[in-house]
Image (cartoon, rainbow, N blue to C red; front, side, top):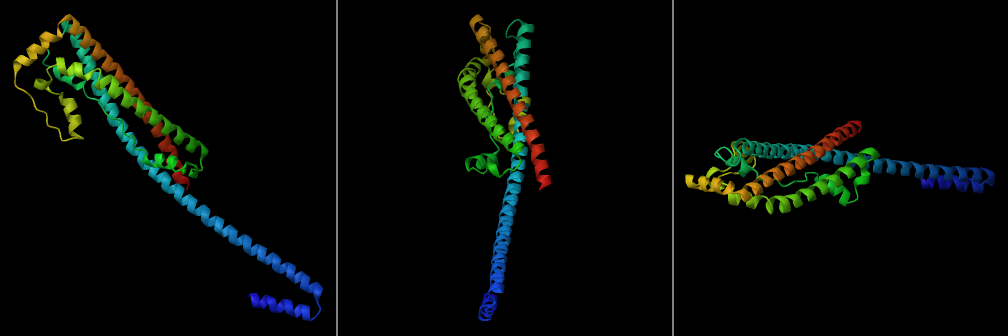
Length: 268
């Protein structure tokens, strides 16, 4: 093709047809420019197509992660519901019996209050996108802003949960409950045990000694012990209520973002 155009130019020069040569040369330049522009357009189209496919892959992975996170949040909410119910029952029992008496049905409820759940962040795709600077591949600006805000909320809530678990439950609440309560003889409630069985190989060892429950009841009804324990039970109820509210708020956010992600996938 290049030789063909060169022969035409040489022929025009040989025939002293300079004006035609000039017009032809300009036309040839225009054709070359057009060819370059077409090549660039094709290249840009290919790059844009790659980005669209990459964005779609990210969106699909985000969708899967959000579904997993919502499932986890449902579990956390159910667990906090157990703590709220059990602690409320302990308080009612305390009020009705004017202290910690007739405790056989209450000991397992007290034992349940020693349980707390670690928060797991299932949004690995979102974390990867932010850490690698790939979040800008999401073209929908509103969705992108929602994802960034959601990641920040998850990080804050996860840290708060860890701090609360360590400082307020493990260190402050649990030791007092285990030391004073008939933990070894009564174990956990059926409701809590069923929750364990969904996730763990659970095998609880119980001690057959009726005297231990009597000792615990006697200790718990000493004025100082009554005050300390009922305060811990009420505090545990408050912590569970706060944790449940946080989990529910995150679930609501995740569900809304999931709807928006699905809408964006449908548009691709």
